[in-house]
Image 1 (cartoon, rainbow, N blue to C red):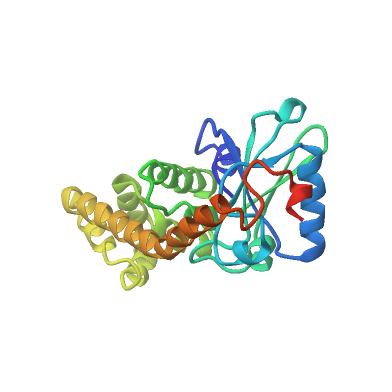
Image 2 (image 1 turned 45 degrees about the vertical axis):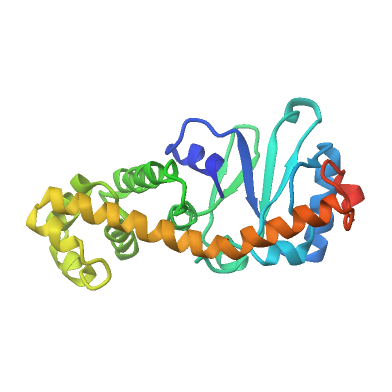
Amino acid sequence: MGGQACVFYGAAQVSRDVDFLLLADESNFKKLLLALDELKARRIAVPPFDPDVLARGHAVHFRCAEGAAAGLRIDLMTKLRDLPAFGELWERRTVIGDEEGHEFHLLSVPDLVKAKKTQRAKDWPVIEALVSIHYRENSENPNPGWLEFWMGEARSPELLVELVGRFPLEARRMLAVRPLLALAVAGDFPLLRAALDAEVREEQEKDRIYWEPLKREMEDFRRAERGGEYPKSEITPKAAR
């Protein structure tokens, strides 16, 4: 659901960790803990590994120490801002296989774009790349859902102008959803770039507001951990049970 998924889609060249979105299910958590034990993964930061904590939107962070995975960081979540529950995301996921028969289940490109709308400046060029790559790969045979996605999420002024030129009827229908498309229709690149920048700032503020109470809770976790109220960092998943 993070940088590694972007690598698979061709929108990033490297990612130093792996982010997983998990089904919040007791049997699934048991399997997860077994896998983390096999990887000799230790929790490296607050919050604690707790399904209730994950359900509130926190991520739990681990560092692996086994074999080829040694040093790899794994971040786990069960809830993403402004995205539906796991089951719906799973139904529209992308599945990629390799020559050895392994399967990799990725957030769909539209869902990944929403997940990358964060406060971090580095995520926004990745969003632009994800949408542009998806358009290039599917532009010859677009369906209505893809047209809505491209016009609703494209971040390149040049791509937006191309889209509204190719699909004027769909662009008019999308104006109520994304008013800046009118600037693309007019070919006003300076104002279009300014409007795109304003969109970024608006989404970053939404993300800040979402995380603000979770950040305060993180401070509570740190104080509790220092006070020994739950097992300290660098515990094994087995001990986290």
